[in-house]
Length: 111
Length: 123
Picture 1 (cartoon, rainbow over the protein chains, first blue to last red):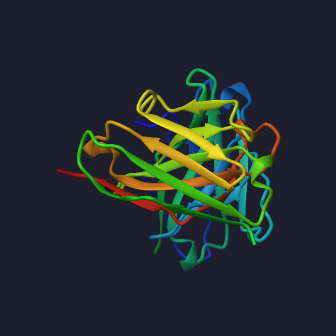
Picture 2 (picture 1 turned 90 degrees about the vertical axis):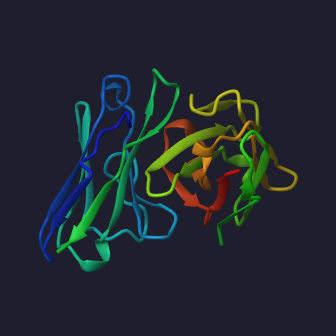
Picture 3 (picture 1 turned 120 degrees about the vertical axis):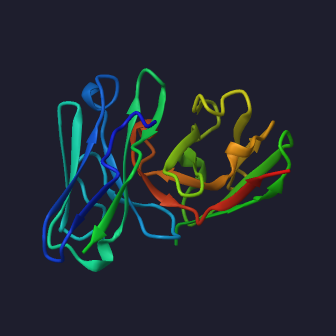
């Protein structure tokens, strides 16, 4: 069971907007540690999608955005495309565990 | 071009040991901390360990503490993961990954990943 909680799956039609939540606690997200998001296409390594809550690395489309509030963070994807179908993971740091933590992952299905 | 290449995976019996390597190129390896992350078949990402740029600090996930060791050789631009007392539940694809910045590396996202090496623990 992951320290960061994500919904197992989300879905949306092409062109729609979807959000993926990442819920933590007072020892990780709530303590002010940054949240990062990754996209993992089938059979490939994860790719950094959002860094430090809301920053997009170079090359990431602006259809992807991130936010953080309290003990939770969210990834939003607008203008959904078939190529967005992938697994998405949030990541942060936990002071109680003294280590890096990942969410359990969310599978995005484009209908 | 920034590149990470893992190697050393394979099939190993429970209780045995295995050492993974991660060869880095295209950046100043000795300036960056480095992580190991694994992914069991059909499961999510699990962080395993991180080592500071000079090897002086190391942190481990509870699931591997005492069994796995992380090290690096900056003269060879190579990161290592020594895995002892392997269990069937250690079967996974193992990735090395680089933090996005050289500062506050424990809290940063990982912007460079290798392609992964597969470890299968089975009798």
